[in-house]
Image (cartoon, rainbow, N blue to C red; front, top):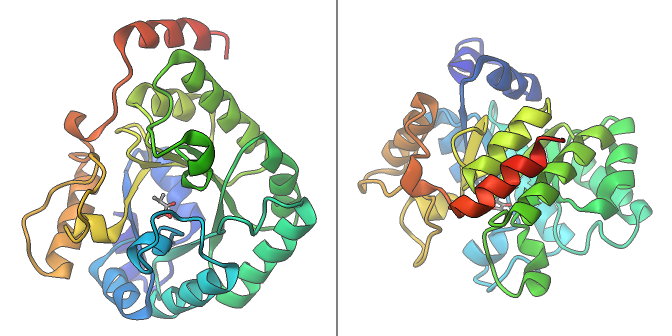
Length: 288
Ligand code: KIV
């Protein structure tokens, strides 16, 4: 496995290893992480990639959404995780309000995140408005991950957290947006809460690694919120595997094994697209 190779050569896991996972069809595990000590344990247990998600807003601070957290807060957490993760790749999440105002604001804040935390890549919840920002950042040499599908920072507009790509029209929009993001220079995509036909098509029409978060088995890596995996949250999403209780290391190792063996996600851990919408989607995307 790619990460075992990194451990035995005592070298960090990089974006190139993630790209290799896509090429060789070997799925990788990713977990959210928000602090130094946990990062150290996840790194030593063999988790190749850590996401310092703005889900910290809910799981660390107890807010009902991801909207309140500040850039300073996310920088502090990301630096702590970086100090703990010697080999795992660290992905920093840009919080709501830190990049939506203008490209200038986004560039300034992303560069600050990169310089102050030494993260490996940054994630933004992307839409059509993000194209020029992604172009500028990738030109500047920053690895940007475009988060598509369910974008929790748009909870106000969505009127709640609903899985995306349920209809052929929505699915078609996500697939086209994924191509737009890759053309703009996104280094990877993160697809949250979409049915398997959507991720399958995204994988087919793009050439960068696709990380799924409740997005079905076609993705090249799978991420869940650590506290959901450990059974510490009251209502984890349906795609989070239910594991027998054990030590942090045991439960995390089990998740890594499930992902790497291809046993995760199974059909009970995915979202559905009604058959008539699937037929329509298949007809529509023939032209993509
Ligand atoms: O903030 C987060 O944890 C995320 C994942 C749910 C993908 O963005």
